[in-house]
Image (cartoon, rainbow, N blue to C red; front, top):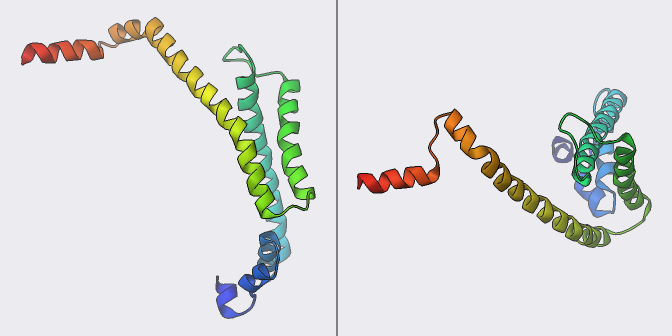
Length: 161
C-alpha cells in the first residue's frame, strides 16, 4: 500500500494493464531492501508450505480411500504417491493452460460438485460411526464416568415438576 501511495509502484495500474498479481508482488518485493534475500525466503516458505500441505492432504485422502485401516498404521506409500500425483497434476495443468479467470472459475465449480458428493458421503459415514460407537461404548462410558444420559435427565426433570 505504501508503494502505491508513495508513487514508487503503480500496482493498480499494472493489474489493470493485465499484469498478474504474482508479477505485481514480485515487483513490489523488488523495491524492498535485500529483495533477493526476501525472494529466496519467500520461495523456501512456499515450498515448505506446499510440501507440508500436500503431505497432510495425501495422508487424509489416502486414509479415507481405504476401506479399513488400523489407527496406528499409515496408508501404503504407493497410495499416497498416487494421490500426491493427482493433486499436483491439476495445478500444473492450470498453470500451463493459458486460460482466463472465467474458465478457472467454471472449472472450480465443476470440480467442486464431485467433491461435494464425496464430502456428503464422508459426513454420512461419520454420523453413522458416531451412532454405532455411541450404542457400543456409550453406556459403559457413562457408567464409568458417572454421567447421566439425556433420557435419564429428562425423566428426572419430569419427576421434579
